[in-house]
Structures are given as C-alpha cells and as structure tokens.
Image (cartoon, rainbow, N blue to C red; front, side, top):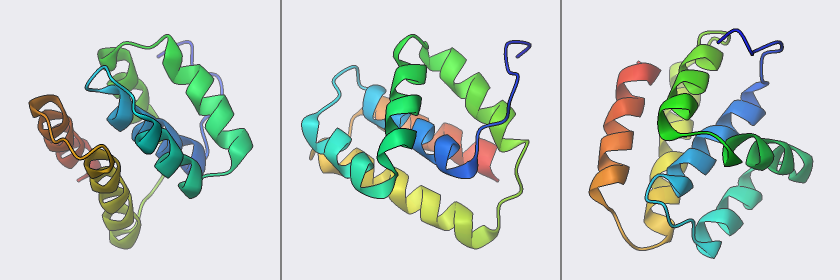
Length: 111
C-alpha cells in the first residue's frame, strides 16, 4: 500500500465499501447508486466513485483493510456499516453468490 499517502475519513471509507458492494456483481444498478448517494455527502461520493473505478476487487479489499486499520470503530459503528452493506446488497433485489462472499469477507475484516 505504498501508494497510500493520506488516510481516508470514515465517511470516505464507508462510501468506498458501499461502492464495492454495488460493484461486486459487475452490474452496478441505479438503485444501488441512488441508495449510496442518500447515505453520504455528494463530494465524498464523487471522490470515492472515481477512486474505485480503476480498482480490482482484490485492490479494493486491500485498500479497505489498510484504511480500516487507521480508524477505531465502536461496535455500534460496525453494526451500522453492516446494515448499510446489507441494504446495498438488497437494493437491486438480487443476492448473488459474489455478494454473499463479500459479506463474509467483510465479517472477517470488520471484527
């Protein structure tokens, strides 16, 4: 992660995580993007949307893990983030294997 020069804020990290949730099935829906936009500030959404565009799933997970290590999260914050993740997964009314796998990965790195 040597390319990381600054640590993302918690809202930036949340946005990136939610965007990865939308992107994981390789078909980002309008519903998913609209939902994420309701949860974060517009400038944060734009910044993190641009950031994730060129990242592979592995690169995204590496970035998330690195940035998670830079913050302390309360149990309540983790529960709220997990609820947001599940909401993004449900927003396109399809729960695919890739989404279930990503949820399990997040369970491992969040706890």
